[in-house]
Image: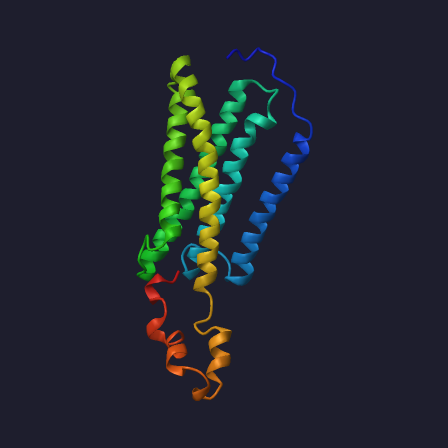
Length: 227
């Protein structure tokens, strides 16, 4: 498409929607940083706090920056197509680099602690999302930037590129939510309030052995699964 063609005007309310999305995104980053810093001891690479690098980097890269990259063609509708394309690709590249730091952090942390890798739904969804995101970026770069495909090939690939871009953002958000839920579950106390209250009653009032089974160490998640 010729860059000299006049682009349509921005939809009504677009600026407000974009401003709200940026505010929400920055709030999520701030909350994640506060969670890692205030409640999990902070962030450091060469210590037991290395794991905390992972959630913060993945939220910044795979959620915030990836979403911003998708908004480029809406926000900068009146800029040249090449300028928007370069910014779109750069934001995705920054997101990939930051996410890669997060992936390296969690694998390196597991290696140092002797924990197993790829043991949960979050792990598999995460590595799938990151791998597909990297492939999506390579495909987009080769088709639309360098060396660049013919106009007919770009036209055929563009719908798939848009679809998988939206799909990967949704998958990334879902994976982050899975990771947060997993981390919260790992931090729950071994005995729930339900078991603590019932264990204080006389044993004849309830099936003690059955209820106690849920709070004994033999029935807990193995230590190698804990982050």
